[in-house]
Image 1 (cartoon, one colour):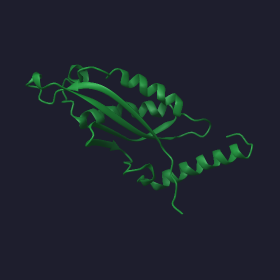
Image 2 (cartoon, helix red, strand yellow):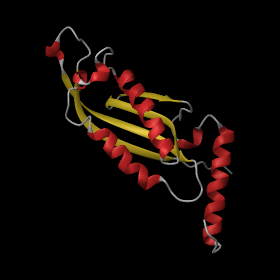
Image 3 (cartoon, helix red, strand yellow):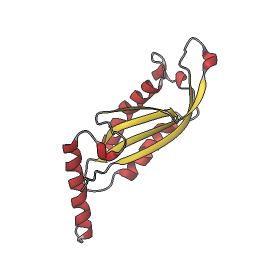
Length: 156
């Protein structure tokens, strides 16, 4: 039997513009960016998933419909897909921690064929391929016990 692993995947899309060639502002162009965030719960008392939705929504509102190059963080850094992904990962990691979750990896794409991934535990194709198996197995054991307690009439 194949081991089953569980993680949440959040997806956010937003429209923004950026310019890779800072010497030619006429090369500003728009994308619909798609960001995927794989997370696991770090607590057993309650599901943190819904609380994180609000946090993520609030975080990405600031990027909707703007020119990324005009933000202070891009003053000394070109907003390439990789740099944008690195900033989002660095910013979102503590936000998820505050909600009792661990950000495993973040994916960002600006076209259907190019996606940049960053994380301490990259997911290769699906959530059951996580690199740190001991962490995943411990997490899955906690979740399984929670559901067993719920089905058995106990408190999860």
